[in-house]
Each structure stands twice: as C-alpha cells, then as structure tokens.
Length: 182
Image (tube, rainbow, N blue to C red; front, top):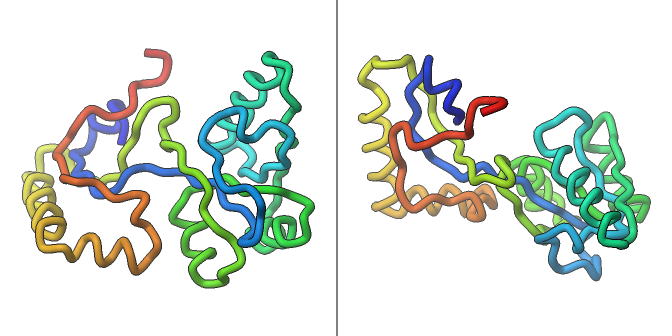
C-alpha cells in the first residue's frame, strides 16, 4: 500500500509486508536482523525486486565498516534457489516471507531466521484494494477485524506459517509508503 496507489484505490490492511531470511534447516545461522548479520554470507534474492535493495544496502554499510562483503546470488526459479541452499552454495534466501514460509512448511528443509519490513527502512502493510470511494473498504476492514477478534485470522496465518505477518487490527487507508522522490 502506497500513498500513490491511495489516489486511485481504498485499502483495508490484513498483513504486514514482510520479507524473510531463510536458511537450511540445520544451519548454524540462527538470526539475521541487521547488516552485520549478513557480512560474508552468500544471500539469494530476486534481481530487480523490491527486496534486492536491502542486502545491497546492508552490504554497502558492512564494507564501509570494514566487514566482509555479501555475495548476492540470483536464480531464475525457486528449485534452483533451494538447491543452492541445500548444497551449501548459498547461506540464505531473502524473498517475500509468504512464499518462503510455505516452502519451509511443505519441505521442512529450511527455517526462518529473520524478517525485515518490505518497505524497509519503513514499515509496510499488505491490503485488500477496492475502487476509490466505492464504500467497500470500511466493510472489508470491519470483516477482517471480526476475523481477528474471533481468532480465525490467527488460525489461518498459523496454518500457512504466516504468523510473522500478523497485524493486531485492520485499518482503512492508513499511511502508506511515500510517493517516489518525496
């Protein structure tokens, strides 16, 4: 959800926008939360994606601080990425959490060791989009809040291994990520 998109759409938030660091299930890496945690690692991410800027920026900070550089790796598909993690050619994969959480839950071969907001360094949320001023957003927000209050929301997130993305309350049109160059 962005301020630019809010000019054309209304939004009802339902999850945090979270990117995840996943490593091999038996990896000695237990936490990746800040730039120094990726120093010297081989990290897979998507070329030209929103998340690519994070390990690249963290690497610049690390190198400036005299730490080992990050080796950013790119693969064309998830099977190749998983093979690189399992074979030790890469230490971690950094991508949208939902995708990697599902893969970890299904295969059991990877584990979550860190999350970063998809709007880094800002916090971002994922939302249902409806036509601007259609009157639907408030109703959807109320429905999501009912699911949160009833516990159904939490059950669904747990089933899909997405509890790291939970929100406490849905909101209609909260502040979004700023417009580019603002």
